View: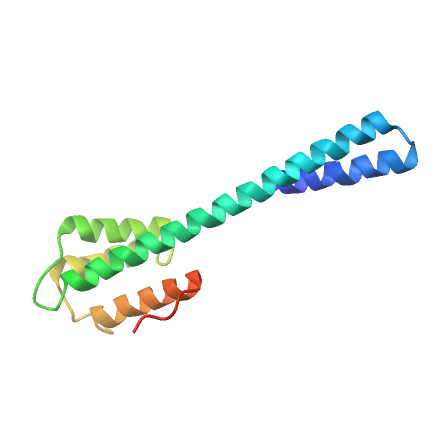
Length: 139
C-alpha cells in the first residue's frame, strides 16, 4: 500500500512540475516513476489479497477435517489440533491464540460438550470463512 501512495505522490508531483515549469525531463521522470510505483503497489495489493484468500481457504479445509475427525466419541490427532490452532490464530486470525488453543483442546479430546457444541462452533467458523470468501453458505 505504501508503494501505491508513493507512486501516486510521484505521479501528482510530476504532473505539477510539468504544468508549472514545463520542465519535461524532471516531470516526465516523476510521472514515469509514479506510474511504475502505482502498478507495483496494485500488484502487491492483489498478491496480499490472494494470500488472505488462500489462508482462509486452508483454514476452512482444516476445519472440515476437524469436523470429520470428531464426532463426540473419537478424538482428532494432536497434529490436526495444533494445525487448526495455527490456522485460526495466525493465518485466518479468526480467534486469539488462547481461544484457538481452547477450541483445539476440544478437537484433540473429541469433546462435543463445548458451550455451543463443537460441531456447531466448527460449522459456524466454516460459514464465516465461506462468507468472507464470497462462497455459498455450506449446508
